[in-house]
Amino acid sequence: MPSPSRPRTSNMPESQPHLVSASDPIGVFDSGIGGLTVVAALQEILPGETIFYIGDTARVPYGGKSRRTVERYSIEIGGLLLAERAKMIVVACNTASALAVPRMQDLFKVPVQGVVEPGARAAVAASKKRRVGVIGTRATIASGAYEHAIRSLAPDVEVFSEACPLLVPLIEEGLFDDSITDQVLARYLDPLLGRGIDTLVLGCTHYPLLRDAMARAAGPDVQLVDSAQNCALAVRDLLAERDIAAGSDHLGRLQVALTDSTEGFLRTAERALDLEIGEVELRSVQSDA
Image (cartoon, rainbow, N blue to C red):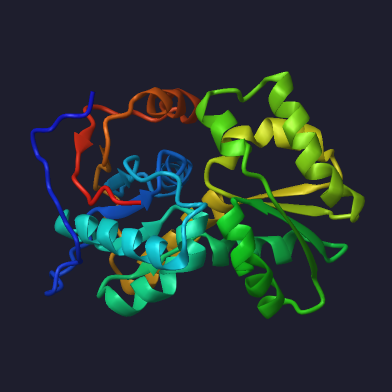
């Protein structure tokens, strides 16, 4: 169970920015555990970086909430990460990236990186037929964030989107290789495949855990774009640009905190992503919806 030994509460970010050091951690958050796919990608690409991850499990999911609420939650979790001396904040949640990153970039003094822009850039680079499909939560799809980002980069690309609200619950039940999951994927992907897409953006950080099943459902002619992997590459570039990357001799580590005591899917994700998650800490947040 998460340890309550270091409970902390934050309603707003720190008013005074701290002096950033290259040895400080990268702060990462998601509405739940799905953002650990971004953590796994970061550890692969940046093994020397320390990562502090917060899963807002007390208020998951963000996907059905308003922009104002998602902004407030994201700013609050960002404040908790600043309290851990985060040198940058990675928003490992497509919904929060779509709805809250601009406000966070205005408010915080450290760099803030979301997952939407890197995924859009990768989709444009991958698509030969200029027909891109995007799947995500209802809030991410309703925001139009991927369509806007892709078309701002390449106006000739046609974008077709599909909200997939049943996928996250299936993933959190650990049904990665199950006939029910295959049936749900077929229902969601068939309309996009019927549009002749050649590229599919996995617009939720939970979705890379279903990458094999999605590859089967989409077929060999469709390129999958993993928002987690491309976000990690963008973080690498931003750290280098700001000259705050950890030294090559630095040994990175992972710390995980949750806002509510839930271990089931955390351990499923730990095994699936080959992460080493030790004692889980607890952080306090407002509990209103």
